[in-house]
Image 1: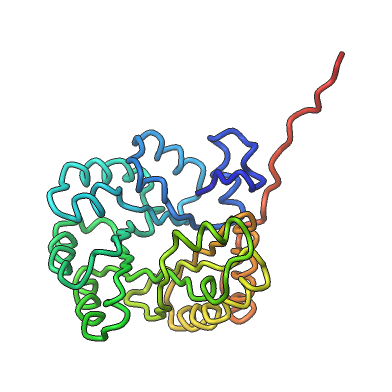
Image 2: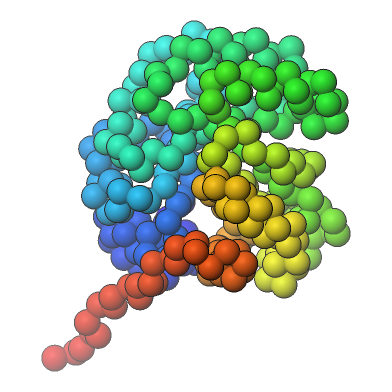
Length: 274
């Protein structure tokens, strides 16, 4: 998502908003692909607006993961893989976000689906069934399936968000929609991915991510290359928060590369009467 109305890049033409976003952050969640597979030409414009080191974590379409539940969706999968191919090295991982009803009894379907996927991409799986978090045996079974495929397990940390009742309209809406997920901090691959949901209050968001600063610092020192996505219910300050998180980690791991220098969007010429 790089077209948020609250962000400075929103007034820019649609073909320039991602370029602006990429001057602030070096990774993005491709969430819109969940609702519709984009045209290949559209994806090509994404590649043209970003450098080869920019990271896209693009979500597989809903018909594949939620409607077909990974079975009998070969046509939809082929169309999606063809569409995202122009991203080339920017395809950091293709993201399978599975529904909350997708539980331990469905792990065999996941294993079969992962076996059929082409080896030219990396894959990351987000599960939301509580058994994978509450039952160590089920967690190990899922980890084994992901390990065979070289796929990562993506945690969605909502612990800090649900610690106290909501205090804003955006928080109240998220309170009803977001899953109450336990925190998971184990990496399965050299490229772990974390999704973190804070609060609309900046300091509460920062306090809630202290755990991840510690974890990500450890991963970097182990030679891993993590990707962290920072969310808040209204996401108004997300780009600045991402940079703040990066700065906190970099203070502990100085060899971590700096983020790009943010670009201010160019404003239009002022209107005049004559």
